[in-house]
Image (cartoon, rainbow, N blue to C red; front, side, top):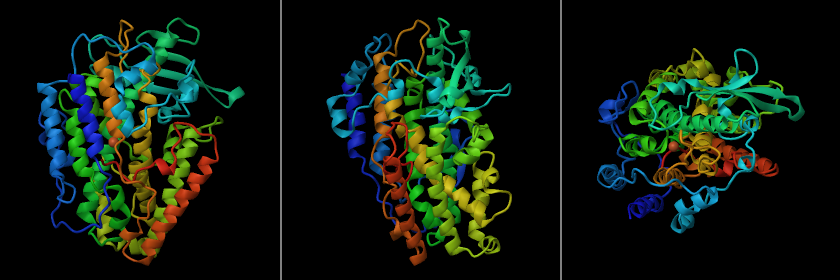
Length: 499
Ligand SMILES: [Fe+2]
């Protein structure tokens, strides 16, 4: 009965959501302030994160607001969580079938098991191909690693394994890839062939999938970068500023969407606490710490790969290649657009609004933006910064959020909780995981559309149309390659992070 009620709520949320048409911007005449997270969301004790003090009028939806208020109230009155429920079916396909009902399937296709999750899972392959490829970095003693040992610091639910884990990889010349050679976790140091190797791999995958959803997706994409991007753009660039028109499709809706999603996911009894491994207190501390460690360079795949020491390192990095190709199309678009409105760096620096926008972003994004934009305002640095923001709202949001659909549901490979007694997730936890991910897949405004109606003049309109053509050309190129579930295709992308 409770399960049916919560399934119905998830289905209603999906059904009633319509992809927003991006309106032409108008000046609201009122600044958006930034305030501490804890003051805006009482009951969620996170102090260092800054959020908008209000939702702009053109984004607000009373209906959706009350829908979420109702949902959060029901967490207490009619919680979907029950103690002592049985575990999900040991056959993963049956587990999906039980949680993802016929009504769900009519709206969005059921998750598919990716090839790399069939049979023995190869962490060396997942380190360079798939949603967790962003974790690979050079290890201080040589080789490469996933290093999530810091996750041991955050309180997790009783009866679960700690997610403090490190996987060491070595290059394997035979396959021009990597091979996982050691996993260090609470089980001790395991090597391939050890009795605990399979369990240690599950702990490693559990750690990266918890981190992707909690830190890289919601904390970093939505709160650390997405929120500041929308605040700075509305406050500094008037409705008829050329950069406002360039940025607008990728930020419209952010404050409204961040507000409702924060409540639904981060409130006590919300999705994050009840699905993933950490308690509410553990999650809040993880949010505070990882927000203050944010590095804007993650929005530029080539520079991020250089920082991690994996670019041109002698092994194949297919996920990185895919991401760089998408970034390059966005960077070409923003460079063309900037060149058509600014004749020189001095010309750009004479535009007080543009300079103010960069300064505002630098103040609002944790640790600033200069690591990406450069120390002074230039056309090159600004075009790269704007490309990074487009990449954030489109590619990164896909890789770390909606794109997990075919990965995160297969908890026999990659659990969201590893129980000490080796049990699988209980049915309520799993049902909630499925519904939360289903709702991440609501329809949004597609990226592949003609945004030239937002342009101020013919120069801008040309740039928007060329961008669309370039994305279509990349789509055709990628379609000619072998299909994989993790690969990001322009046709799958959405213009922004907002439902
Ligand atoms: Fe999201």
